[in-house]
Every structure is written in structure tokens, then in C-alpha cells.
Length: 395
Image 1 (tube, helix red, strand yellow):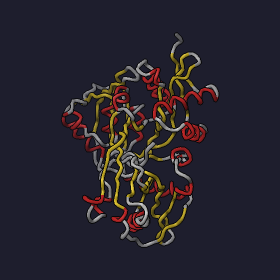
Image 2: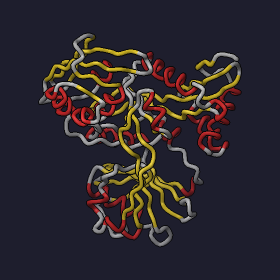
Image 3: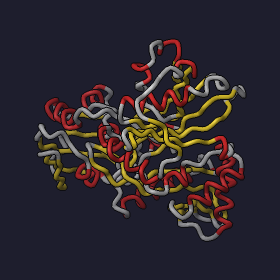
């Protein structure tokens, strides 16, 4: 049998085979996957696993940034990891994960976030859970009375939307610093264009928020409003955009905020009877991976009030190595050099969850995912700072 290799696509026939594997893996329609691949090809680097001339799997990487500590860290979003059913549990996924890490390192990438259909596979290759993606389903009549000063605007320019996101999302750890092609690739909707809407909110001529939503159905065929993205930088924009969604109350009984809000969203504090009007359900896990430890530590922002020297030992299953590093944290920055005694020891997965701000080093030690002197672990947690963690996009 021919050897399994992972390489760049050769021709359109390779993409056709990839589409078939994607359809078999996730159950989406061939037409939708064809449209997505066509939109993605100019912007996404695809890598395909082949045995001889047969494409048995593949994945895509989209260059982007990810905000951590107020800085945009170089990232590659991992998209559409698929393996043909006949080639599962035969090493194809592992070969692609090793290739993925190598490609990211060659391109000076620091982190590689993804949404996992199966946590076990990605954890084996160095990713770790950062957070759950959730849907908040809200009774539309709970939103109808909300009002905000200002006014809605129809379809504001994409550049203005991205500028708004970049102006306030660095206050969290985890949101994407999206590339300009994001909406063309990942904003694709299965709904007719006349059922998809984009509105901004303006106050005194300034854009302070926006919402992107569509009309769709639930698994029980109930009509509902599905919100794919909502950002509001002021209370007026929050109330105004939610009230705009509430205006659908006469036809659509529910509004679903689909994987675009955190588990503890503003809805809990804005709605007078949130316990009865909001239902929250967890879905896919956002998983995070550091693909280059020195680059990731030096790219992130750190708490300004903490200065500390850390001697770190990190095991990486995709590289078959254990790396020892000394890290000098000072004045919101980190200086990394090889060497040291490796006083704090962990896998790259545990380090990635700590880096994302979702797993404290002291909790990782309690779970036996990390070990080290208590003073070092406490300093690591102080260095993360007080930003909440939130992945504002799904992909």
C-alpha cells in the first residue's frame, strides 16, 4: 500500500475528493460545501492527506490574529478537519495534526484555535478545552420593550464593523482579530439573502454596535430569529439592537443567539426575568493550542504589576519533544530563552488553556495537569491578569 502523505492540493480533483469527505464527515449538503470551498480557496491554505492518488482527508488554515492581554497574537484558525470514513483510526488524523503544527511553526504562528467535533482527538495532539460554545434562546417578547438612544442603520460598511470590533474586543482574552475575508468565508448563510440582515446602531453619527441575523428554523421546524453576531459597545447600542430583534415578536416566538455570546452574557443582567425568558445550551468546545511556545509567550500581553522569572518544561506530542525555557516577565512583556531547570512542568495543552485564561495554573496542578512550586503557579495566574475569556466567533 502507498504511504500516507500530507501535502498541498494538486488540482480541482483533489478538492472534489475533499468535498466528498467533508459531506460524509459532517452531513452538510454538497452544494453548501462546494460554495464554502470556492469562497475559502483564495484565503485559506488547504492541506490534503493522500494515499497514492486518493485524497483521504484534509484541513484548512486561515491566517488571523487572536487577542490576548490586549495584543493581537499571530494565529492560524483551523478549519474543516475531515477524514474519509474508510480511513479513520488508521493514522490519517494524527499525520494531519503533525503537519498542521509544522506548517504553523514555519509561518511564525503562535497559536492555532479550533472548534472540536471530538475533544479526544485534538487533546491527544496538544489542544486543550478553552470554553464551550453556547446558544442562548430568548423569548422574543422579552426583548420587545427595550429601547436605546440612537437609531439603527442598514448594512453599515464591513470596514466600519471590523474597526468597531478591533476597538473593544482586546478587553477580552480570546476574540479573533479577523482577516478582511472573514465574512466572505465564514459568514456564509444557508438562508436566502432576503432572510439575512445586517444592522448597525449609531449614536450621534458614531457606530456603536451591530447585529447580523437571519430567519431560520429549529430542529422542530419552529420559525425563529438566529443571531450569528452581535457587538455593542454602549448600553444604548445593547438595548437598541436587542429591541430591534424584539420587533420580530409578532411572527417569531424565539431569538437564538447562536454561539456568539459567552455563557455569562449581558442578557442575564438586562432582562428582568432572565430565569424564565432565557435558555442556554452548550455545544462545541473551543480548543486552544500553542504551536510555538516562545513566540506565544512573547506575543501576549501580561499583567503590568507582576515581574517574575519562570523556568518551564513543556511536552509537545506533535513534536515528540520536551522543551525547557526560561521566561522573564516584566512590564507587560515576556523575554524567552532556551534552558533552565524546568521547575514548572506541563503539556502544551495545559499551558495553552492557562494561556487562554480559562485554566488557572493552580487548578491545573490540582488536576495533575501541571506541577511546580506554589509561588511559580501563583505568579502565573497573576500574570494572566483580569480580562475575561470569550471567543466571539465560531468557525
